[in-house]
Image (cartoon, rainbow, N blue to C red; front, side, top):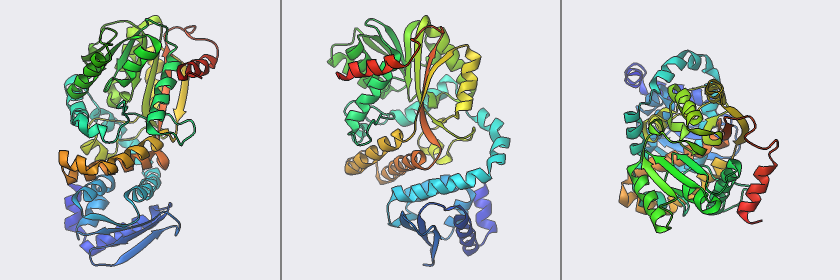
Amino acid sequence: MLRQALSSIIPERAAYELLVKLLRRAVRLGSLALIDPWGERHVVGTGDAPFVTVRLTEPGEAARLLASPSLRAGEAYMDGSLVIEEGSLRDFLLIGVAAAGELANEARAVKEIAAPLTKLRRHNPIARARANVAHHYDLSEEFYTLFLDDDLQYSCAYFQSGDESLEAAQAKKKRHIAAKLRLQPGAKVLDVGSGWGGMALELARSCGARVDGLTLSQEQLAVAQARAGAEGLQDRVRFHLRDYREEAGVYDRIVSVGMFEHVGVPHYGEFFDMVRERLAPDGVALIHAIGRKDPPSDSDPWIDKYIFPGGYCPSLSEVFAAIEKSGLWVTDMEVLRLHYAETLSRWYERFQAGRDTAARLYDERFCRMWEFYLAACEAGFRVGSLMVFQIQLARDVAALPLTRDYMVDNERRLAGT
């Protein structure tokens, strides 16, 4: 292992010198003070805010960070060997994610060489997809209620002004998507990756749709079915424990929110072929997912190991290449830039408010893992290359009006304005 090799080859103090030298080159946002295990303080950065001081408590930590910066930074925080002494975890990760972006630009050629291996590792057959989903989404409902909105929306909210409450912004997200779907009462809708059921129930309530939701999470399925029954919508909204590749119906509309990140690059063609085959001739689909503005790259190793095994946020070039081969029309495209940063900020604050409950449900290390995850992802949207895209698709070039005016009109109608 590279980490073990560096630890045995580089003396501990020399490793810290190398780490500081790397940080001096990379940190271009904020000011970072690093206190090593011998008490020496090293200051890097611009001299401007945010100001953060971290202490590394283990002599071998620098070598481990040099070998795998992203993976080990998260692990060190989880283990308590990386301690935030001044400033906040969120500010530390803003500085770190921005610095990682500087280093990534230097390593672009290496990433391009490694791209074929990356694609091979994203092979995602149904059995693996089920296991990956269970790792993250089969945590208890009580845990997710600590930080999500009342509707349990676990995807990017939509902020028109930026100061909305989480509940208001998630309601606007659902209306924004419903408006693009241009639903008629009685329309058959397939919700691919239906989560805890909020989007499907909203489309049935507000638009009169009949919805089939697909999930691979046992926990989410149980909650979604219970919610449909409680609202008396079980005849119009049905949820299934089913992979999208197992679906056989034909639908007027297909919607997928926050699921495409779990498809895997080798399966993009399969996914968009499914969309084309499951859509009625005049059907419309809306795909909402996290992407990146940069060229194709590998997933963050810490996120891949601890949070979303098998997950991947694609570049738009990867998505459009697969759509082009499917024969579908791209009828609309929107990029949401800072919306997810605002969403994650609110999730982080709510998680901190309910942290004692989370520790009771799981343990302290789990809590440190989740707060690192939420803060790192927020930083990825604020100073990294992450964004959210919404791509509208159709089989027929004439399936939708000539202009986007209908989206605005539908959104206002759904909002009651």
